[in-house]
Image (tube, rainbow, N blue to C red; front, side):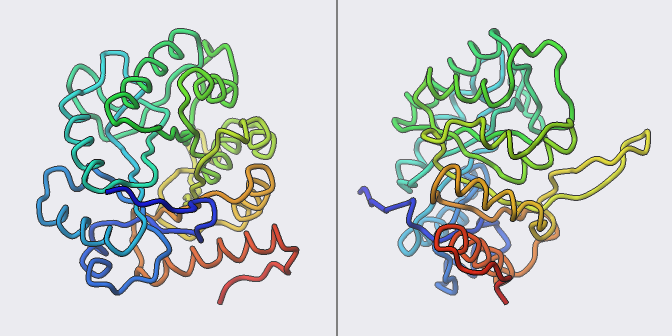
Length: 289
């Protein structure tokens, strides 16, 4: 059964994490839409049942963390088959994942690791994205990573790599605005120029999440994508710029660590709606109370 939503008209949604699952499944949520990590449900029958219950009342997107389109040793087809079964059951309006690798020779790593932006990596990632889309029978949406290092062997900018990937495969892009900000801060480039460099017609979703300010071993500042805090004001400003660049897109509030109440997540989503309203309607920007 297919459900159609005017996804670009949706108010901001929130990431659905397991501690909030029962509360939301019981009908206590006023969230406009929800995004779940499918890997949390593939081997958890009770959680899966609750997620299917949630799906009856809310539009749902899936954000994969184990597909690993950057892996050079081939995709885990058994994992993809399990993912496809869940996708067929839920019929999410978006399925997304990261421009990164997290598996090697059948071993899953608890991290999203970077890739160089060169011809070899493009061939690998494009082949993998094609395979994911063929198996899932739908468009895959690829997210820009949170970056802490860059490869000296890269031959093109990240934005150019993502644009070519979208052109080659027909995939869409997920612009994580917080990732764009912290990567720019960590690697020394302009976050606004990064947003300007992404192909606007390929962007299908936006993410917003909190980061943590730390110091590296040499004492230099570094921003870590912890998803453990409220969204920083500088990211809200960049989000307004992203909205002007890409137009209204489904926007998600991500919060994974030091998880607050679901009501606080909804408050962040409501503020995203305030920012969008101010951006498109010229209303005064004021923090949602």
